[in-house]
Length: 401
Ligand SMILES: Cc1cc2nc3c(=O)[nH]c(=O)nc-3n(C[C@H](O)[C@H](O)[C@H](O)COP(=O)(O)OP(=O)(O)OC[C@H]3O[C@@H](n4cnc5c(N)ncnc54)[C@H](O)[C@@H]3O)c2cc1C
Image (cartoon, rainbow, N blue to C red):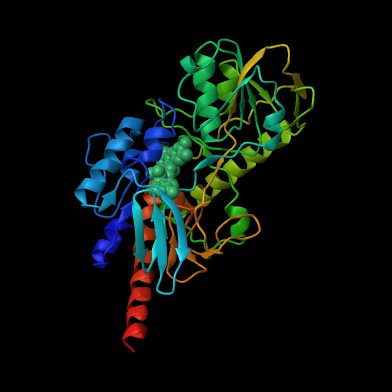
Protein backbone atom coordinates (compact mmCIF):
# COMPACT_ATOMS: atom_id res chain seq x y z
CA UNK A 1 0.00 0.00 0.00
CA UNK A 2 2.88 2.33 0.81
CA UNK A 3 4.35 1.77 -2.64
CA UNK A 4 0.98 2.45 -4.31
CA UNK A 5 0.37 5.60 -2.23
CA UNK A 6 3.83 6.80 -3.32
CA UNK A 7 2.85 6.18 -6.96
CA UNK A 8 -0.09 8.56 -6.37
CA UNK A 9 2.28 11.05 -4.67
CA UNK A 10 0.20 10.76 -1.50
CA UNK A 11 2.11 11.90 1.57
CA UNK A 12 1.93 9.07 4.10
CA UNK A 13 3.63 7.27 6.97
CA UNK A 14 3.65 3.56 7.92
CA UNK A 15 3.37 2.96 11.66
CA UNK A 16 4.72 -0.39 12.92
CA UNK A 17 4.82 -1.50 16.54
CA UNK A 18 7.89 -3.72 16.05
CA UNK A 19 10.40 -4.11 13.22
CA UNK A 20 9.40 -4.45 9.58
CA UNK A 21 7.86 -7.95 9.16
CA UNK A 22 7.13 -8.03 12.89
CA UNK A 23 4.50 -10.80 12.71
CA UNK A 24 6.96 -13.05 10.86
CA UNK A 25 9.67 -12.29 13.40
CA UNK A 26 7.60 -12.85 16.51
CA UNK A 27 4.49 -14.94 15.81
CA UNK A 28 5.61 -17.96 13.74
CA UNK A 29 7.23 -21.28 14.55
CA UNK A 30 10.93 -21.72 13.73
CA UNK A 31 10.63 -24.30 10.95
CA UNK A 32 7.82 -22.53 9.10
CA UNK A 33 8.25 -22.33 5.36
CA UNK A 34 5.76 -20.48 3.17
CA UNK A 35 3.14 -22.68 1.62
CA UNK A 36 3.20 -20.43 -1.45
CA UNK A 37 6.12 -20.97 -3.86
CA UNK A 38 8.83 -18.34 -4.24
CA UNK A 39 7.61 -17.05 -7.61
CA UNK A 40 4.19 -16.37 -6.16
CA UNK A 41 4.98 -13.63 -3.63
CA UNK A 42 4.77 -10.78 -6.14
CA UNK A 43 4.65 -7.27 -4.70
CA UNK A 44 4.25 -4.06 -6.72
CA UNK A 45 7.55 -3.62 -8.57
CA UNK A 46 9.23 -6.50 -6.71
CA UNK A 47 9.41 -10.23 -7.33
CA UNK A 48 11.57 -13.29 -6.69
CA UNK A 49 14.91 -13.09 -8.50
CA UNK A 50 16.63 -16.23 -7.17
CA UNK A 51 17.34 -19.55 -8.80
CA UNK A 52 14.61 -21.60 -7.06
CA UNK A 53 11.25 -20.13 -8.13
CA UNK A 54 9.38 -23.33 -7.20
CA UNK A 55 10.89 -23.57 -3.69
CA UNK A 56 9.31 -22.25 -0.50
CA UNK A 57 10.79 -19.46 1.59
CA UNK A 58 12.05 -20.22 5.08
CA UNK A 59 11.05 -17.88 7.90
CA UNK A 60 14.39 -16.04 7.66
CA UNK A 61 13.91 -15.64 3.92
CA UNK A 62 10.39 -14.22 4.34
CA UNK A 63 11.66 -11.67 6.86
CA UNK A 64 14.52 -10.68 4.54
CA UNK A 65 12.16 -10.48 1.56
CA UNK A 66 9.77 -8.07 3.29
CA UNK A 67 12.57 -6.01 4.87
CA UNK A 68 14.30 -5.75 1.46
CA UNK A 69 11.06 -4.61 -0.12
CA UNK A 70 10.55 -1.88 2.48
CA UNK A 71 14.09 -0.67 1.74
CA UNK A 72 13.76 -0.95 -2.04
CA UNK A 73 10.63 1.21 -2.14
CA UNK A 74 11.88 3.59 0.56
CA UNK A 75 8.74 3.01 2.63
CA UNK A 76 8.46 5.74 5.30
CA UNK A 77 8.17 3.24 8.15
CA UNK A 78 8.25 4.41 11.77
CA UNK A 79 9.19 1.26 13.66
CA UNK A 80 8.57 0.62 17.38
CA UNK A 81 5.50 2.83 17.20
CA UNK A 82 2.33 1.25 18.53
CA UNK A 83 -0.99 2.74 17.49
CA UNK A 84 -3.08 3.02 20.65
CA UNK A 85 -6.20 4.64 19.18
CA UNK A 86 -7.71 5.88 15.93
CA UNK A 87 -10.64 8.30 16.23
CA UNK A 88 -12.65 10.46 13.84
CA UNK A 89 -12.10 14.25 13.75
CA UNK A 90 -13.84 16.95 11.69
CA UNK A 91 -11.17 16.81 9.01
CA UNK A 92 -10.17 13.14 9.11
CA UNK A 93 -8.60 11.02 11.82
CA UNK A 94 -6.53 11.39 14.98
CA UNK A 95 -4.07 8.52 15.33
CA UNK A 96 -2.55 8.25 18.79
CA UNK A 97 0.61 6.21 19.29
CA UNK A 98 3.03 5.55 22.13
CA UNK A 99 5.40 7.92 20.32
CA UNK A 100 3.20 10.92 19.55
CA UNK A 101 0.00 11.65 17.65
CA UNK A 102 -0.76 12.00 13.97
CA UNK A 103 -3.56 13.88 12.24
CA UNK A 104 -4.45 12.56 8.82
CA UNK A 105 -7.21 12.67 6.22
CA UNK A 106 -7.26 8.91 5.61
CA UNK A 107 -6.16 5.76 7.42
CA UNK A 108 -5.35 2.33 6.00
CA UNK A 109 -5.86 -0.43 8.56
CA UNK A 110 -3.10 -2.89 7.63
CA UNK A 111 -2.52 -4.33 11.07
CA UNK A 112 -3.04 -7.92 9.96
CA UNK A 113 -5.78 -10.55 9.97
CA UNK A 114 -4.01 -12.89 12.38
CA UNK A 115 -3.23 -10.85 15.52
CA UNK A 116 -4.92 -13.09 18.09
CA UNK A 117 -4.96 -16.88 18.22
CA UNK A 118 -8.59 -17.97 18.34
CA UNK A 119 -8.78 -20.33 21.31
CA UNK A 120 -12.18 -21.67 22.48
CA UNK A 121 -13.40 -20.45 25.87
CA UNK A 122 -13.45 -24.00 27.30
CA UNK A 123 -9.64 -24.00 27.20
CA UNK A 124 -9.91 -22.29 30.60
CA UNK A 125 -11.25 -25.57 32.06
CA UNK A 126 -8.15 -27.57 31.21
CA UNK A 127 -6.13 -28.90 34.14
CA UNK A 128 -3.26 -26.52 35.02
CA UNK A 129 -0.82 -29.42 34.64
CA UNK A 130 -1.29 -29.20 30.86
CA UNK A 131 0.79 -26.58 29.07
CA UNK A 132 -1.17 -24.66 26.45
CA UNK A 133 0.38 -23.10 23.38
CA UNK A 134 -1.05 -21.67 20.18
CA UNK A 135 0.25 -21.70 16.62
CA UNK A 136 1.34 -18.13 17.44
CA UNK A 137 3.64 -18.89 20.38
CA UNK A 138 4.67 -22.47 19.53
CA UNK A 139 8.28 -22.35 18.32
CA UNK A 140 9.70 -25.91 18.18
CA UNK A 141 9.33 -29.33 19.85
CA UNK A 142 12.24 -28.67 22.25
CA UNK A 143 10.01 -26.10 23.94
CA UNK A 144 7.63 -28.91 25.00
CA UNK A 145 7.78 -31.31 27.93
CA UNK A 146 8.30 -34.96 27.00
CA UNK A 147 5.02 -36.83 26.66
CA UNK A 148 1.82 -36.67 24.65
CA UNK A 149 0.67 -33.63 22.72
CA UNK A 150 -2.84 -32.81 21.57
CA UNK A 151 -2.85 -30.56 18.50
CA UNK A 152 -6.25 -29.01 17.88
CA UNK A 153 -6.98 -28.00 14.27
CA UNK A 154 -5.94 -29.69 11.04
CA UNK A 155 -5.52 -26.88 8.55
CA UNK A 156 -2.10 -25.76 7.32
CA UNK A 157 -0.72 -24.73 10.75
CA UNK A 158 -2.09 -27.73 12.71
CA UNK A 159 -0.90 -30.40 10.28
CA UNK A 160 2.60 -28.89 9.99
CA UNK A 161 2.98 -28.54 13.76
CA UNK A 162 1.56 -32.05 14.42
CA UNK A 163 4.00 -33.54 11.90
CA UNK A 164 7.00 -31.82 13.44
CA UNK A 165 6.08 -32.76 17.02
CA UNK A 166 5.35 -36.40 16.13
CA UNK A 167 8.77 -36.66 14.47
CA UNK A 168 10.37 -35.32 17.66
CA UNK A 169 9.26 -38.52 19.43
CA UNK A 170 6.28 -37.08 21.32
CA UNK A 171 3.07 -38.98 20.52
CA UNK A 172 0.57 -36.64 18.88
CA UNK A 173 -3.21 -36.77 18.85
CA UNK A 174 -4.68 -34.49 16.19
CA UNK A 175 -8.19 -33.15 16.64
CA UNK A 176 -9.63 -32.66 13.16
CA UNK A 177 -12.33 -30.09 12.42
CA UNK A 178 -13.23 -28.52 9.10
CA UNK A 179 -10.28 -28.51 6.73
CA UNK A 180 -9.55 -28.70 3.02
CA UNK A 181 -7.15 -31.32 1.80
CA UNK A 182 -4.90 -30.35 -1.10
CA UNK A 183 -2.15 -32.10 -3.08
CA UNK A 184 1.10 -30.14 -3.22
CA UNK A 185 1.66 -31.07 -6.85
CA UNK A 186 -1.10 -31.76 -9.32
CA UNK A 187 -0.56 -32.90 -12.88
CA UNK A 188 3.12 -32.00 -12.60
CA UNK A 189 2.62 -28.44 -11.32
CA UNK A 190 2.28 -26.77 -7.94
CA UNK A 191 -1.34 -26.51 -6.84
CA UNK A 192 -0.80 -22.77 -6.27
CA UNK A 193 0.22 -22.45 -9.95
CA UNK A 194 -3.02 -24.06 -11.05
CA UNK A 195 -5.13 -21.92 -8.71
CA UNK A 196 -3.36 -18.77 -9.86
CA UNK A 197 -3.54 -19.61 -13.58
CA UNK A 198 -7.15 -20.82 -13.48
CA UNK A 199 -8.26 -17.63 -11.73
CA UNK A 200 -9.29 -19.31 -8.45
CA UNK A 201 -7.08 -17.04 -6.35
CA UNK A 202 -8.09 -13.95 -8.28
CA UNK A 203 -11.82 -14.57 -7.83
CA UNK A 204 -13.41 -11.34 -6.60
CA UNK A 205 -15.46 -10.80 -3.47
CA UNK A 206 -18.39 -9.49 -5.51
CA UNK A 207 -18.39 -12.55 -7.79
CA UNK A 208 -18.90 -15.32 -5.23
CA UNK A 209 -22.39 -16.51 -4.25
CA UNK A 210 -21.98 -16.18 -0.50
CA UNK A 211 -19.07 -13.98 0.56
CA UNK A 212 -19.78 -14.43 4.28
CA UNK A 213 -19.37 -18.20 3.90
CA UNK A 214 -16.35 -17.80 1.61
CA UNK A 215 -14.67 -15.71 4.32
CA UNK A 216 -15.09 -18.53 6.85
CA UNK A 217 -13.48 -21.24 4.68
CA UNK A 218 -10.26 -22.52 6.31
CA UNK A 219 -6.91 -22.28 4.56
CA UNK A 220 -5.81 -25.18 2.35
CA UNK A 221 -4.00 -28.00 4.13
CA UNK A 222 -0.71 -27.25 2.34
CA UNK A 223 2.94 -27.22 3.41
CA UNK A 224 6.05 -26.01 1.62
CA UNK A 225 8.45 -28.92 1.90
CA UNK A 226 11.86 -29.32 0.24
CA UNK A 227 10.73 -32.43 -1.66
CA UNK A 228 7.42 -30.76 -2.63
CA UNK A 229 5.51 -33.63 -1.06
CA UNK A 230 1.91 -33.55 0.11
CA UNK A 231 1.26 -33.29 3.84
CA UNK A 232 -2.21 -34.62 4.60
CA UNK A 233 -3.94 -36.73 7.24
CA UNK A 234 -2.85 -39.96 5.52
CA UNK A 235 0.80 -38.92 5.83
CA UNK A 236 0.26 -38.04 9.49
CA UNK A 237 -1.47 -41.36 10.19
CA UNK A 238 1.45 -43.18 8.55
CA UNK A 239 3.87 -41.44 10.94
CA UNK A 240 1.80 -42.52 13.95
CA UNK A 241 -0.39 -39.47 14.64
CA UNK A 242 -3.76 -40.48 16.12
CA UNK A 243 -6.75 -38.74 14.54
CA UNK A 244 -9.81 -37.76 16.59
CA UNK A 245 -12.81 -35.56 15.79
CA UNK A 246 -13.27 -31.85 16.44
CA UNK A 247 -12.68 -30.91 20.07
CA UNK A 248 -16.23 -30.05 21.10
CA UNK A 249 -15.62 -29.21 24.76
CA UNK A 250 -13.87 -29.92 28.03
CA UNK A 251 -15.92 -31.07 31.02
CA UNK A 252 -15.55 -29.53 34.49
CA UNK A 253 -13.38 -32.49 35.54
CA UNK A 254 -11.02 -31.99 32.61
CA UNK A 255 -12.26 -34.58 30.12
CA UNK A 256 -11.85 -33.65 26.47
CA UNK A 257 -14.89 -34.45 24.31
CA UNK A 258 -14.40 -35.07 20.61
CA UNK A 259 -17.21 -34.83 18.07
CA UNK A 260 -18.19 -38.04 16.29
CA UNK A 261 -17.88 -36.28 12.95
CA UNK A 262 -14.32 -37.25 11.98
CA UNK A 263 -15.42 -39.49 9.10
CA UNK A 264 -17.79 -36.82 7.75
CA UNK A 265 -15.21 -34.05 8.10
CA UNK A 266 -12.69 -36.09 6.12
CA UNK A 267 -15.24 -37.09 3.47
CA UNK A 268 -16.22 -33.43 3.08
CA UNK A 269 -12.60 -32.41 2.83
CA UNK A 270 -11.95 -35.04 0.12
CA UNK A 271 -15.06 -33.81 -1.70
CA UNK A 272 -13.94 -30.17 -1.61
CA UNK A 273 -10.49 -31.17 -2.86
CA UNK A 274 -12.16 -33.13 -5.67
CA UNK A 275 -14.24 -30.09 -6.66
CA UNK A 276 -11.18 -27.86 -6.80
CA UNK A 277 -9.29 -30.39 -8.93
CA UNK A 278 -12.33 -30.85 -11.24
CA UNK A 279 -12.37 -27.11 -11.79
CA UNK A 280 -8.64 -27.16 -12.57
CA UNK A 281 -9.12 -30.08 -15.00
CA UNK A 282 -11.92 -28.20 -16.76
CA UNK A 283 -9.76 -25.12 -17.08
CA UNK A 284 -6.79 -27.16 -18.36
CA UNK A 285 -9.04 -28.78 -20.98
CA UNK A 286 -10.43 -25.42 -22.08
CA UNK A 287 -6.89 -24.05 -22.41
CA UNK A 288 -5.80 -27.04 -24.51
CA UNK A 289 -3.28 -28.12 -21.86
CA UNK A 290 -4.42 -31.75 -21.67
CA UNK A 291 -1.74 -32.96 -24.07
CA UNK A 292 1.01 -30.95 -22.34
CA UNK A 293 0.56 -31.95 -18.70
CA UNK A 294 0.16 -35.43 -17.17
CA UNK A 295 -3.41 -36.80 -16.96
CA UNK A 296 -5.57 -36.12 -13.87
CA UNK A 297 -4.58 -38.20 -10.86
CA UNK A 298 -6.35 -38.21 -7.49
CA UNK A 299 -5.18 -39.02 -3.98
CA UNK A 300 -6.77 -42.06 -2.32
CA UNK A 301 -9.53 -41.13 0.18
CA UNK A 302 -8.48 -40.01 3.67
CA UNK A 303 -8.05 -43.04 5.94
CA UNK A 304 -10.09 -42.67 9.11
CA UNK A 305 -9.74 -44.91 12.18
CA UNK A 306 -12.62 -47.41 12.63
CA UNK A 307 -13.57 -46.07 16.05
CA UNK A 308 -11.85 -42.76 16.79
CA UNK A 309 -11.76 -41.80 20.48
CA UNK A 310 -14.71 -39.65 21.53
CA UNK A 311 -13.20 -38.60 24.82
CA UNK A 312 -9.89 -38.34 26.59
CA UNK A 313 -9.25 -37.99 30.28
CA UNK A 314 -6.63 -35.26 30.45
CA UNK A 315 -6.08 -35.45 34.20
CA UNK A 316 -3.80 -38.57 34.46
CA UNK A 317 -1.02 -36.91 32.50
CA UNK A 318 -0.72 -38.74 29.17
CA UNK A 319 -1.19 -35.39 27.45
CA UNK A 320 1.39 -32.84 28.60
CA UNK A 321 0.74 -30.10 26.07
CA UNK A 322 -2.10 -28.79 23.93
CA UNK A 323 -1.29 -26.74 20.85
CA UNK A 324 -4.24 -24.71 19.59
CA UNK A 325 -4.10 -24.35 15.82
CA UNK A 326 -7.69 -23.19 15.68
CA UNK A 327 -7.27 -20.05 13.61
CA UNK A 328 -6.68 -16.39 14.23
CA UNK A 329 -8.63 -13.16 14.39
CA UNK A 330 -7.65 -9.52 13.95
CA UNK A 331 -7.27 -7.11 16.87
CA UNK A 332 -8.91 -3.72 16.35
CA UNK A 333 -9.31 -2.94 20.03
CA UNK A 334 -7.65 0.45 19.37
CA UNK A 335 -10.08 1.48 16.62
CA UNK A 336 -12.54 3.98 18.11
CA UNK A 337 -14.65 4.43 15.00
CA UNK A 338 -18.11 2.77 14.87
CA UNK A 339 -17.44 0.44 11.94
CA UNK A 340 -18.00 -2.97 13.54
CA UNK A 341 -20.75 -5.49 12.84
CA UNK A 342 -22.38 -7.61 15.57
CA UNK A 343 -19.51 -10.09 15.36
CA UNK A 344 -16.90 -7.39 15.89
CA UNK A 345 -15.69 -7.51 12.29
CA UNK A 346 -15.17 -4.35 10.26
CA UNK A 347 -17.99 -3.51 7.82
CA UNK A 348 -16.41 -2.85 4.46
CA UNK A 349 -16.99 -3.16 0.74
CA UNK A 350 -13.87 -4.78 -0.70
CA UNK A 351 -11.64 -2.93 1.78
CA UNK A 352 -13.46 0.42 1.53
CA UNK A 353 -14.65 0.75 5.13
CA UNK A 354 -18.13 2.12 5.78
CA UNK A 355 -16.58 5.30 7.30
CA UNK A 356 -15.19 7.76 4.70
CA UNK A 357 -11.41 7.85 4.46
CA UNK A 358 -10.91 4.51 6.21
CA UNK A 359 -9.48 1.53 4.30
CA UNK A 360 -8.60 -2.05 5.13
CA UNK A 361 -5.81 -4.32 3.86
CA UNK A 362 -5.01 -8.01 4.33
CA UNK A 363 -8.47 -9.12 5.53
CA UNK A 364 -9.73 -12.57 4.59
CA UNK A 365 -11.18 -12.63 1.02
CA UNK A 366 -11.23 -8.84 1.19
CA UNK A 367 -11.30 -8.09 -2.55
CA UNK A 368 -10.11 -11.45 -3.85
CA UNK A 369 -9.60 -14.97 -2.59
CA UNK A 370 -5.85 -14.20 -2.43
CA UNK A 371 -6.28 -11.05 -0.30
CA UNK A 372 -4.67 -12.68 2.76
CA UNK A 373 -1.68 -13.94 0.76
CA UNK A 374 1.42 -11.82 0.26
CA UNK A 375 0.67 -12.19 -3.45
CA UNK A 376 -2.79 -10.68 -2.97
CA UNK A 377 -1.65 -7.39 -1.46
CA UNK A 378 -0.52 -5.82 -4.75
CA UNK A 379 -3.82 -5.91 -6.67
CA UNK A 380 -5.80 -4.84 -3.59
CA UNK A 381 -3.42 -1.96 -2.83
CA UNK A 382 -3.50 -0.72 -6.43
CA UNK A 383 -7.30 -0.55 -6.43
CA UNK A 384 -7.74 0.80 -2.90
CA UNK A 385 -5.03 3.45 -3.34
CA UNK A 386 -6.88 4.67 -6.46
CA UNK A 387 -10.08 4.91 -4.39
CA UNK A 388 -8.18 6.70 -1.62
CA UNK A 389 -6.62 9.16 -4.09
CA UNK A 390 -10.07 10.00 -5.51
CA UNK A 391 -11.39 10.43 -1.97
CA UNK A 392 -8.60 12.89 -1.11
CA UNK A 393 -9.18 14.80 -4.38
CA UNK A 394 -12.90 15.04 -3.65
CA UNK A 395 -12.12 16.21 -0.14
CA UNK A 396 -9.71 18.84 -1.42
CA UNK A 397 -12.25 20.08 -3.98
CA UNK A 398 -14.92 20.36 -1.28
CA UNK A 399 -12.56 22.28 1.02
CA UNK A 400 -11.55 24.67 -1.80
CA UNK A 401 -15.22 25.25 -2.67
C1 LIG B 1 0.99 -19.20 10.19
C2 LIG B 1 0.80 -18.38 8.96
C3 LIG B 1 1.35 -18.81 7.76
C4 LIG B 1 1.17 -18.06 6.60
N1 LIG B 1 1.72 -18.52 5.44
C5 LIG B 1 1.59 -17.78 4.32
C6 LIG B 1 2.18 -18.21 3.09
O1 LIG B 1 2.77 -19.27 3.00
N2 LIG B 1 2.08 -17.40 2.00
C7 LIG B 1 1.41 -16.21 2.04
O2 LIG B 1 1.36 -15.51 1.03
N3 LIG B 1 0.81 -15.80 3.18
C8 LIG B 1 0.89 -16.55 4.30
N4 LIG B 1 0.29 -16.16 5.46
C9 LIG B 1 -0.53 -14.95 5.45
C10 LIG B 1 0.38 -13.78 5.72
O3 LIG B 1 0.35 -13.50 7.08
C11 LIG B 1 -0.05 -12.66 4.92
O4 LIG B 1 0.12 -12.94 3.57
C12 LIG B 1 0.74 -11.38 5.18
O5 LIG B 1 1.64 -11.47 6.24
C13 LIG B 1 -0.23 -10.33 5.57
O6 LIG B 1 0.47 -9.14 5.71
P1 LIG B 1 -0.17 -7.96 6.47
O7 LIG B 1 0.82 -6.84 6.35
O8 LIG B 1 -1.56 -7.73 6.04
O9 LIG B 1 -0.29 -8.47 8.00
P2 LIG B 1 0.86 -8.78 9.02
O10 LIG B 1 2.00 -9.47 8.39
O11 LIG B 1 0.21 -9.41 10.20
O12 LIG B 1 1.38 -7.32 9.43
C14 LIG B 1 0.64 -6.46 10.23
C15 LIG B 1 1.62 -5.56 10.96
O13 LIG B 1 0.89 -4.61 11.72
C16 LIG B 1 1.54 -4.41 12.95
N5 LIG B 1 0.57 -3.92 13.93
C17 LIG B 1 -0.54 -4.55 14.39
N6 LIG B 1 -1.18 -3.78 15.28
C18 LIG B 1 -0.48 -2.63 15.38
C19 LIG B 1 -0.64 -1.43 16.15
N7 LIG B 1 -1.67 -1.28 16.98
N8 LIG B 1 0.28 -0.46 15.98
C20 LIG B 1 1.32 -0.61 15.13
N9 LIG B 1 1.53 -1.71 14.41
C21 LIG B 1 0.63 -2.71 14.51
C22 LIG B 1 2.09 -5.79 13.31
O14 LIG B 1 3.18 -5.67 14.20
C23 LIG B 1 2.48 -6.35 11.94
O15 LIG B 1 3.83 -6.14 11.64
C24 LIG B 1 0.43 -16.87 6.64
C25 LIG B 1 -0.13 -16.44 7.85
C26 LIG B 1 0.06 -17.18 8.99
C27 LIG B 1 -0.56 -16.70 10.27
